Image 1 (cartoon, one colour):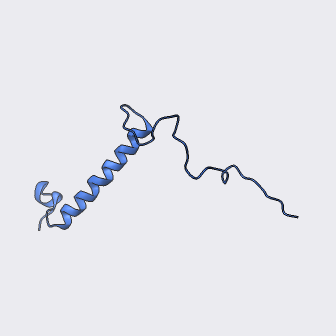
Image 2 (tube, rainbow, N blue to C red):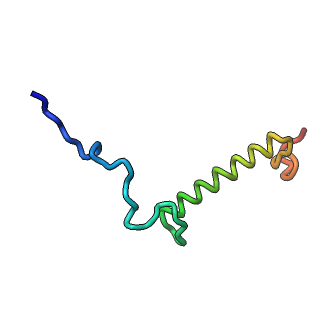
Image 3 (spheres, rainbow, N blue to C red):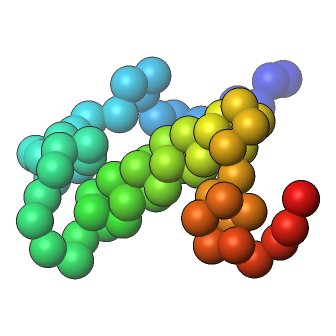
Length: 70
């Protein structure tokens, strides 16, 4: 005898519906979870550009702030 156990976490559709009828990735003004998502995305993009800039030979810490010497 096979007993199929159902769990709410496994009965989800393949594609989840929109969150409260609003796109989760839409830009909304104010202190919203969407704003935090966009803030994180832009911070990651900025950090990657900084790493690429630093690897290209330009150091913000060394050349602009003069914190460390050659």
